[in-house]
Amino acid sequence: MLRRLAAAALLVGAGFVVLQVPPATAAPACSVDWTANQWATGFTADVQVTNGGAPVTSWTLSWTFSGDQRVTNGWNATVTQTGNVVTAASVGWNGALATGASTRFGFQATFSGTNAKPADFTFNGVSCSGDNPGPTPSSPSPSPSSPSPSPSTSTPPQEGCVPAASCDSFETQTGTTPGGNWAVSYPDCSGAGTAAIDRSVAHSGAASLRVNGAAGYCNHVFVRNTQLLGTAGSVWYVRYWVRHTTALPASHVTAVAMRDANDGNRDLRFGGQNGALQFNRASDDATLPEQSPAGVALSAPLPVNVWNCLEFKVDGRDGTIETWLNNSPVPGLVEDGVPTHDIDSQWLNRTWRPALTDLRLGWESYGEGADTLWYDDVAVSAVRNGC
Ligand code: CA
Image (cartoon, rainbow, N blue to C red):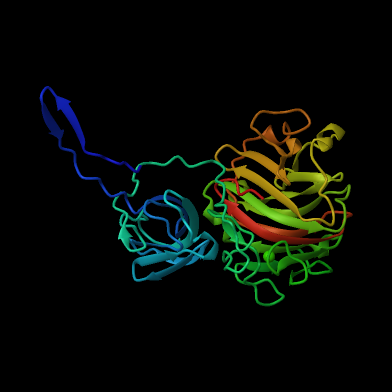
């Protein structure tokens, strides 16, 4: 992008002809790659800013919203708004940007009407008139900015979370009863199943969600979030960290449930059976994988007493599912739209185009099976979050 133009002289015959060239054009102060994921009343934006000028040790990026957008929270930058003007300020670990270097931050906002990308970015007070307006290919697996964290500086506000995701690491919880966007529910009757914020165990930060899961109908318990899934449109990459004390039982259990508005509000369930992870569709009890020994062998147990990174993608556009456990794809937890013996031929008995509307973390046993589980760093986005 930087161009150096130098005057040139050519010797022609016996005389000199000086070619006039324009003076060197100042490089734009920055370029901005802006990716918004919006729903009816809000959006998240993943913003990559590239320093087009001299190296800086800290930065601010400012812009003006043309509509009624209001920032509610940010990550990897301190994002503040006055009227329609928003300023994102670097945090300690991402302030230093060499010429040409990039970093990413994000925020969540509400809006009504239209939600146009801002056009007037300034970087450390200098207009980014060379803002790159062209479409920038977005990577399907964006790598979060890789800062060199220095121990004495501030950390992102959502510890354990990634840019471009709606994320909850339970760090903003104030009591032991889950609050804010989380609410405990006992879907059947209230018994020994309980859920609470735990400040003695955490994957990141100081807090996690603990579920004491017990066998039996009256012990079903979930902690419900109606906000996280709303950010991703019709494709949901869900990532969470979980640890638990007891191997998955032979009986069917559910640990994560998501209401499917396109399936009579019945749940898409994620849990286990025959000792391995399993999806289950409540409306017709289809399982993924099929519970043949060969099918179960293509899934995986959930290791106990360690933090596990679980990721799955549910695509409402074509009804496909992909799953990763600790970064490894799990072949038995893939529904690719093509019937595969022992895996997804039962699931594909009918057309399924899920519209997921909530995320519930908890424990539901239909026979045997008790467990204690901790959940942390729950992230949902339209692209893979990673671990
Ligand atoms: Ca946490």
